[in-house]
Length: 344
Image (cartoon, rainbow, N blue to C red; front, side, top):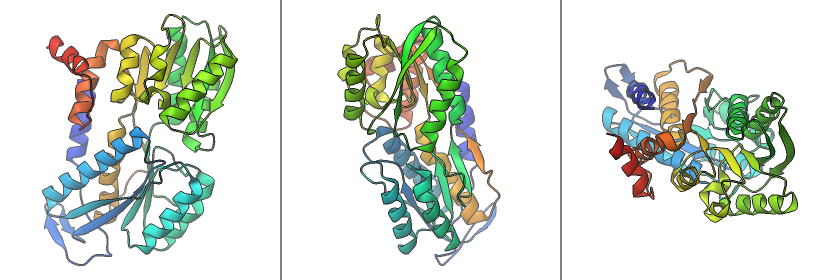
């Protein structure tokens, strides 16, 4: 993971900065003339009460600060995320961001069908749009940054089968069933499950993407179907709450996507022996770099920019906790940080 961190930081160090044409003035740096001194990026994640999107916001704001300092610009993040998932509300917020003179829009799409028209309208009006985490591939967005979701789902199933020794009765926790990224992850789980004849599918569970709703959904499903002894979670929603820590790790195992501070206790206790961490901080940090590169300097940005997942287990729990702390996360149990120190 140390190697990955070094590569990530190196990549971030070479991101170029610019700004869009709606502001007056210019700035000059070693790469040439930057068109403008200010870039306002409207950021519209899925929901403001989901910790993974708050970490993306933290990363975006850090990138804005770092790049502003480096190049004497004023890159700002205009957070316009709705409190709960709502594709129609996201579409309205895209339109309002255009009205309010945003220089670019960065969005994780709750429902691609409902936001594609708004994205296209924004682009037609001269406001470039980039997606992260959950794409709208049929829209006019110029780039996407995030995990390969089909591969992500396969990784969840492969690791769950390994944890269970190839035998178990599993359910899939899928979150918002209209989110295109989650649909692909679920399909990835289902496709991979065909390779494990001893892993028997029980059910798929959709829910509102809050820790409380997700935890309640898991509990209801297990009460209704007591044969469930393992979960393939394509998002880590219930693990942001503490209620499932009462599960007996000898009877129930979980493999989930995401590994933020509240979730680490599940790894430590053995309930979730494997978490597949998305460096969600980079959703914001790297995406801001791509946007200013495209909007400010007119550089070509790859359409698809893959984010690799990081496998978190007890073996690297301390190192991952330190990485989260370096990214500005708080609320990390000191004992996990001590695990890394004790290895040095």
